[in-house]
Length: 196
Ligand SMILES: C[S@@+](CC[C@H](N)C(=O)[O-])C[C@H]1O[C@@H](n2cnc3c(N)ncnc32)[C@H](O)[C@@H]1O
Image (cartoon, rainbow, N blue to C red; front, side, top):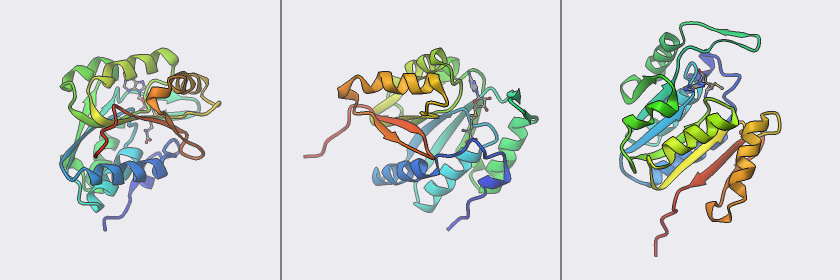
């Protein structure tokens, strides 16, 4: 079993290890190579956690890590050399070859993915309501049927993400799943595939 190494980078905002472990098991059940897009990866805490979980389950995967890699100062934190730290973390976790960093605004970079090509998309980038509208709108068609999309910070402490998740929940056909503290995630399976 490969050990987790995510605590060696900034991980205060990575609170969704329970959710990522559930996702890793769901992806393993597919028994085929999977493609993942993570939006907002910072220094790779969540990315390396998911990678290690997938490797330990024997899942073949390609993970596209979308970020501007230019956060700079945020609240009382300072982030420098984000892409270098992210890459170092991927090497340390042993998943450097399976992770492709994509630098730039995530909603604009969605076009690098074919429609119906992704098995999992996780949104933890721009936390404004319009940012979510853009990211979710840009990546929804990129998800395969049966693919899963989730987003972090579904909590009243992040009013825009909270409002967005509640808006999704108004549509009963989406069957939105919510994961509470500490994960704080909303999650939707696109056109779930039911086996007879
Ligand atoms: C809350 S942090 C992500 C934390 C990360 N998921 C983890 O596990 O540590 C948000 C990240 O989103 C990125 N970001 C914000 N707006 C973005 C945008 N429009 N396009 C791409 N990345 C964006 C920031 O650079 C930052 O790294």
